[in-house]
Image 1 (cartoon, rainbow, N blue to C red):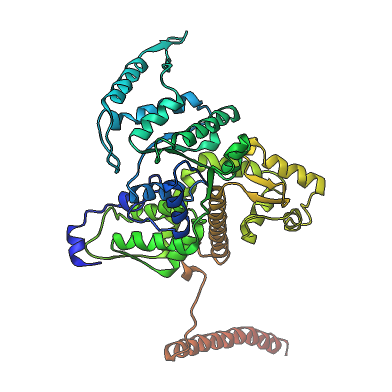
Image 2: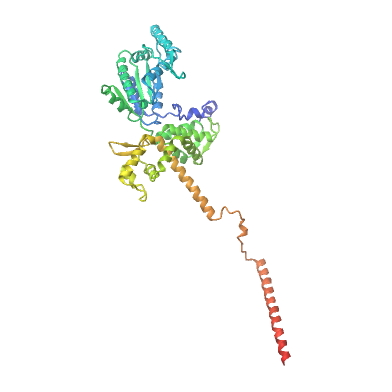
Length: 472
């Protein structure tokens, strides 16, 4: 990195590696998907559904493109308990920065005084609330004037896009209401060219929305965002460490790519943990070297962070007779999906269940009780790990288990060879050295033994001779 950049740059670790927020400094362009997104954003009336696995970079891709084309936007978020009225209120609240604070995202706009007055009137009515019987929770009443049509007008006046994140989480009844609003926004494009809804959700979200209303079939663009490739993940790693003036060896980079499981957010998390535990908090003036020896810290950190969720699922599965083997098969074969026979044949014969038992078990692991961790594709009849985050967890968990087993075996070997004995070696070991000193000592000892034997023989022989003389 240029010395002047190191002198004047103020980039910090949490600005470079951002596991929980939109990546900017380390954003990796995905040309084909971005071109499609820009095309649909510029097409009046075309609503958009962006779908793919969580952590695959959907929000980052959208936010970077909106910033690039200087497009105003508001953002609302869905939970399982979110109703359409909640989304309507969230969206209206988000409009405050445009209508009250008059802060633009990018695109310039002009709001008529009449519309501002109407917005202020609705805002004042929203400040009223009713108390539930417990007296603790307050619920805002939605004024009759605040309709989806009125919201579309408010958004249209400021050339704004409405982003609905995690659309897949809401219940079917509320999804149907969202589908109805999508049609309203299609019609609103006749008066406001840039107004539109962008839904972000998990795999299958686009299909769900279209199935709710067939009239949306040609009016909604379905944009699938796949997980990043190994090359794209490596690019994130390279960019980030260069911005910190940190060098990493090839082995460490390969490990980050492998254990990230092609998830952008997990790549950022691993790199963040590596730097944090190495006390790298901002751009370094002098370069620092990181090697693969520091990688286990990051892995342990991720496993600990997910101990309350993934570890419980993992433990509940492996406590079954062949549960560990089922999970290990996915990790060992390195395939996205497996057939029933592939799973069965990788279970040891001594543990192997019948077909019926294994089918029932896989259905059980695919239930809500196990967070639907194993999913069956009804068309291909193949099984897959539903969450790429859980799959990444499995990679790390098995690697740690293997490492721990190696340490246990090493300790056993050392114990077997008396490596941990509290006795000093010389108590049991004698070194034999053949030299002049040894030979001299040996001859003296040997001479003493011979002389002692001669003396003993003389004492025995002489008395016997004396007794013979007496008899004569």
